[in-house]
Image (cartoon, rainbow, N blue to C red; front, top):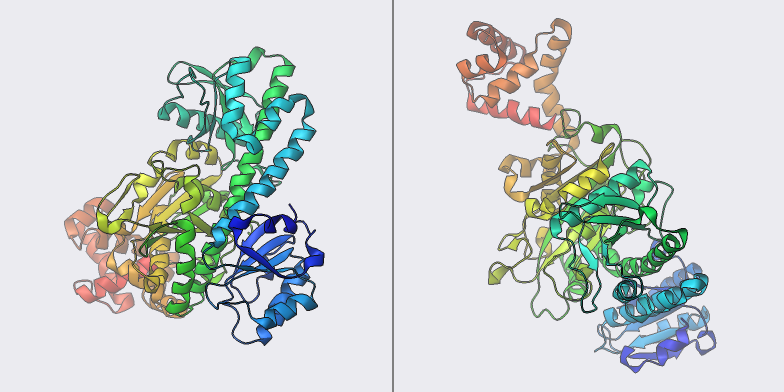
Length: 596
């Protein structure tokens, strides 16, 4: 779309302040920011929306506009809600750099402009695709630009007598036929089976369509709906792509019908990309909030960003929401293959690499740990956006309430909770907010099949916090809960804040050098002795503490005579100068083992 078209819609509340000669520029996207330097999040062609929070003195306008012009943005729209009229220094700076400038009236939300631009740009993409797939013109021109996937599925039903549904990677229903007399959709159990079969087939490199007979006795044919944003590694997209399920056996279909169904998947992929693009604003909001939290910004600054995020995620909410943090990590290769055993157990006290890296929004992740080169953080971001969708939410896109950013190997979700004080409501949320087990109950089976072989998903959920002051603690709490989940067996594991003991909450605030010195002082003499004498003093110490200092129970667990156990404990005390009959020394050893 062209910038000029924005002025033709009075509901957007835009007024041109400068750059009339540049209104034929093409708008390829939209971005909301109040960062002083947003260049790393710009790719060119965006309409940039800003509340001017970055402007502290007139000279800031020149610096900000110069950055936007260098990035090739299409135009700038400044809101009047914070400062009133747009400052003259900003108008002059935009004129010098030939950057079109609009003002946005106070009663129009940035979300309204964002939704309009995304809808227009996506519609144009759908029109381009319709021209490419000309022989399926009727399907293409009636698709996303003309009503969404449901229109296409209704045409399949009326023209070809095929019942079809669009499912997410976890089996959640995205779309289905709406015409009268349509076949009943597969039950939830079967949808999970179908999604799992599709994920397994894609991971194994099997060519589609894939066939499966569900628990309901119906044979289904499965067609992948691949996102336009695909990478070289199938693991980057396989866990987030949609799935077209047809209630028929495609094994004997002629090539023409198979081509038609593949054309349908291409059309629906446009809708998939449109919805994914609509998440860009929410992802960037999460990135900005979490970047402030991780860099130790003042609570007032974090609170200001939350006030921007709240109406975008929960429009119409009269009061400030509570917030929860959910952390997810996808690991590939040798680390994940351990399936949560001793080698995969990270230890709840270890500092995450994500603590020391900036949070990024989609498209800029590093490789996942554990080898393989798959971007674990980006995959985890897509999975969190799927897992956190409230199945009971109304409206065309329930994921509008979800804001997820990611680091190289970790995704972090900022979840607003609007009604905690009003008691429980549907969707696995009560007065304490989201529950880890409830989040994964419906998705564990298909995701386990999609991760099978070399992948693992672990997830941690914080307690709800009432204000910006608690977000940093909530982030640490969610990360610790995820590490507890990582110590468990299985491909898909989760833990919540309820499972964290008090000492676990204290450990992240202990500096690395203090932690290393503490554990070395207590455990290094025992490790060295074990290395030289194969005495197994460390395993003995762990078992003794696990048995609460009971000689008989510990000896039975280790299959030792009690006298042998007493000899080993005595050796531990001799080497360390500690007394394991004293509570203080037991506690020190316990913490040292947890931090090692």
